[in-house]
Image (cartoon, rainbow, N blue to C red; front, side, top):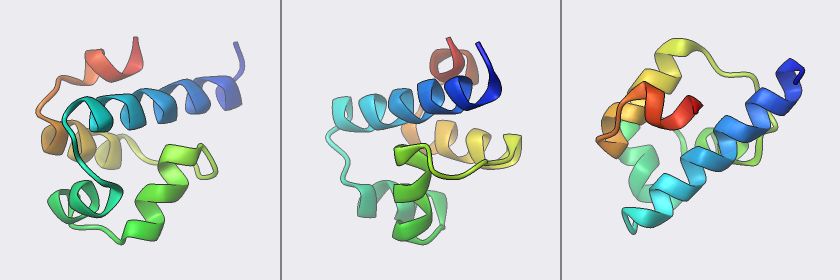
Length: 70
């Protein structure tokens, strides 16, 4: 699997976990202290994000990093 496929997998997982928690993109973005448009790009797999950003999202979703990456 190349890095683009990994990013898409993680992005889909973030969106899935967010929906399971019944969070809108706006609500999750607020919890992460980021712009809604930035989070939308992350969820769509259209941007390369940092580990720090991924950890911030995991904290907002109240999940561990391992729950998002595999």
